[in-house]
Image (spheres, helix red, strand yellow):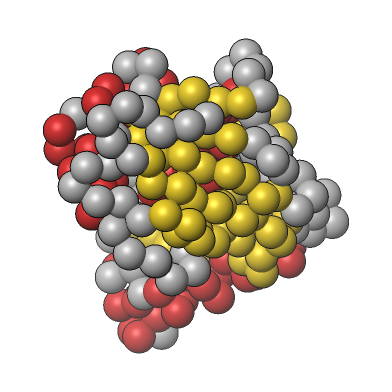
Length: 217
C-alpha cells in the first residue's frame, strides 16, 4: 500500500499481545456459539416490597448480548448491609469488580477464564492536515481477537463506525479475505483507510487522534 497522490498517509503499528483482564468464555444465544463475555460493571436490581433480586450484567464482546450473573435471589432487604445495598443501586465499581471475579472463579470449571488481549498503538508517521489515508500494520502474538475490535480500540471508534467504513468501501485489507473484519487479526496484516470516503467529522477525528504518538491503549 502506498500514499495517495496529493497527500501523505499516516502510518501506524498496532501490536496485539496477551493481557491480564479476565473474562468468561460461554455460549452466546445470539451468536450461536461460544464467545467472550465481559462484566459491564453495572447491576440489575429488582426490589419488590421486602425482597430483592440482583444480578451483575455481563456482555458478549462480539454482539453485546446480555447475560446476568445472579447475586441475590429473593433475599430480604433487611438482611443486606446498607452499604452494600447502596453500592448495588449506584453501580459501585469495586463491588462490581468483586462480583465479576467471583463469577469468573465459579464458572472456571465449565467455562475457563480467558485473557483479554492488550492493544498498543505506535505512530510511525503522524497525521497532518494533509493526510488522506491511514496505513496500519498488525503485529499479533498468538491468536488475535476480531479485526474490527482491534481497529475500534486502536482508533477509539465504535465497532459500528468501523462497519460504516467497510460499507463505504473506505477500508482495504491485505491479504484480502471474505469478512476479514469479522475474523481474527493476523500478524503482518495491512489495512488502509481512505479518509476521503469517511464522513468529514470522522476524518477530522482520526487526524486529531493520530497527530501525535499516543500512549499504550
